[in-house]
Image 1: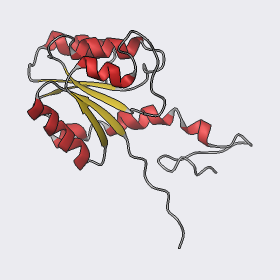
Image 2 (image 1 turned 180 degrees about the horizontal axis):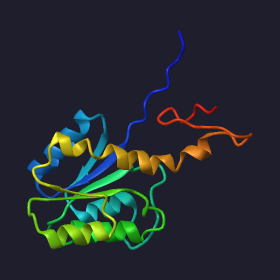
Image 3 (image 1 turned 180 degrees about the vertical axis):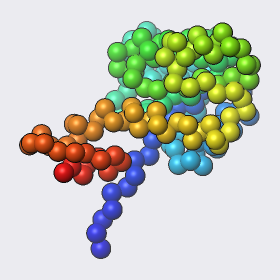
Length: 165
C-alpha cells in the first residue's frame, strides 16, 4: 500500500470578545477542517503571536496561516490588531480577515486599505469561510519553492507541493 501525503491543515487564529461569536466561528472553521486557536482579546492574540511587549519574537513552533478578528472589542480593536500584524516583519504576510456586526462603509474601507484580505458581516456563515481558502493558498504558495529541489526547470503543484516535475 502506498502512503498518501496528508493534506496540510491550516491553522487559524480567531479573535472575538463575544463567546457566542467566537464559538460560532470556531465551529464553522473546524467544520471546514481548519485547526483553530481562539482567544477573547487583541492582547491575548498579540501574546499568542509573541507581539505583546512590542517585540517581534514569534513562537516559531506555532504556525498561524490566517487571523480572523472581530472589529469592535474592548481595549484594542481588530483594526489595531491588523495594524500590529502588518507592521511586524515576521507576521506581515499572514492574511487578516476582519468581521463586524456593524456595516459601516468607512470602517470597511479603512480595514481593506490597511491590508485586511476580507471584511465579513456577522453572523459569519459557512459561505464566508469558503472565501478564506484562496488567501491561505496565496500565503502558503510563498513556501513552495523552498520545498522543491533547485536542480533544473520544474513545476510544483499545490497542495502536493512536494511533487515536482
